[in-house]
Image (cartoon, rainbow over all chains, first blue to last red; front, side, top):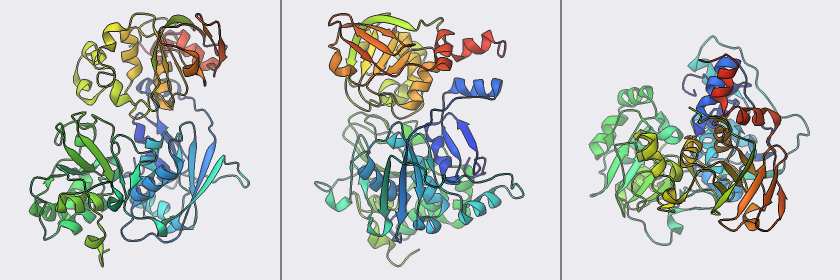
Length: 320
Length: 171
C-alpha cells in the first residue's frame, strides 16, 4: 500500500491487517477491518466506522542521527500508553524533515497502542512519495484538521531530546528504556530486522552501514527480512545484502516470517531476541519462554554485533 | 462461516478474564493458524489458562478486562464461538476484535465496571439492544454501550456472511 501509493492522501482505505493504520503516514484514513467486512465492502461498497476522540501529537525539534521512527514511537508509547478508542493526529514543524519511511514506521506502530487511525498531514514529502510511486495520478486531495478542532489530549515531542530506545518484553505501553537503562545487560540469541514496521530499504541500509566490515557476534542469529521483494532487489543492487551476508547475517526473502513466528527465526525457550518488528507479545515468535525486545533497525544491528542489547550511536557517528 | 442465528438477549454462566490488553496471539497463537478449527480452538488461552477450553460449555459468557482482543486482526471470535461462548462483556474491547465479533455474529459489548460486578460463575442476563447487564446472583444491574442498530442487525442475522446471503449479494 505504501510502496505503490495504493493509499492516497484524503482517502479512506480498508484492509484486514491490523497494521493497515500504517497508511496514515500518507494522510490516508486507514485501519484494520475483518475479512468478512472486505466481502461486505465488495458487495455493498459500504462499511462502518465509529468516530473517536483524537489525540494531537506535535513533533518539534531536530531529529538526531541515532533516532528513528521506532524510537519516536517508543517515546510516545511511554507518554501515552494504550489509547484504545482514540485516533492520533500528528502535526508540528519536525514533520517536514521526517522521511516517509520514518513516518510510516511510526504510524504502523500506532496499532500497538490500539489507536484507530493515525494521521500525518500531507506535505511535499507526501507528494513526492505518491508521484514517484504512481506517476501521473493526481486524483487526491489531502485532509487537514478543522481550525479549532477538538482534541481530548495534546502532547509535544521534542525529537532532539530522544534517544535510541528498546521496548522490554511482552508489551510496549509504558515499557521502553534506553539500552543503558536496562536493569542489566541483555545478551541476545537472535537479532531480527524485518516486518512492515521496519523492513524497508532504509532499515536494510542502516543495518548494512553498521555491520559493514564487522562480524555478527558468536552465537547470535542475525536475520534480515526485507518488507517487500522490491526492497530486497533494491538492497541487493545497493550492495546492502552483500554487506549483511559478509557480516554473518541471514537475508531472507520478503515475508512476515519471524515477526509472527511464521518461520525462519522461531525462538526457543530461554532465548532473547531483539527485533525491529511490531510485536513483543509472549509466545509470538515461538516459545512463550522466550523474550522479545523491540527497537529500531540500527539498535538491532548494533546489538547483533555485540551480542547484547546495544545503543547504536557509536556505529552511526559521522555516517548518514 | 457463521454458526447460525445469534440472539441479542443472552443469558449464561460467566468466565472471568480480568487481565487488561489480552491479545489475540494468546487466543489464536501463530502455530495454530495453519491447523484445523478444532485444533485452533484447543489453543485458546493455552498459555495463560491451560485447560480452560475443556471447562467452557455452550452458552457461557466471557467477562473481560480492558482492551480485550488487542493486537493482530486474526478472528479469534470464531474460536470463542467454536468453544460455545455466546457473548462477551468487557471493560473495553479492542476495535478490530469487536468488529470481528459482530462480523461473526458473536454479541459483544463494553460495560465499564463489569469486572467488579461479576464473580466467576455468576449468571448474567445481557440485552445487547439496550446495553443492560443483570447479574442473576446479586440482582445488580449495569448499563454499558449498547450495540447500534446496524450492528445489532448483523448479529441478529447471524453475522455478515449470512446477512449478505439474505440480501442475495453472495451465494
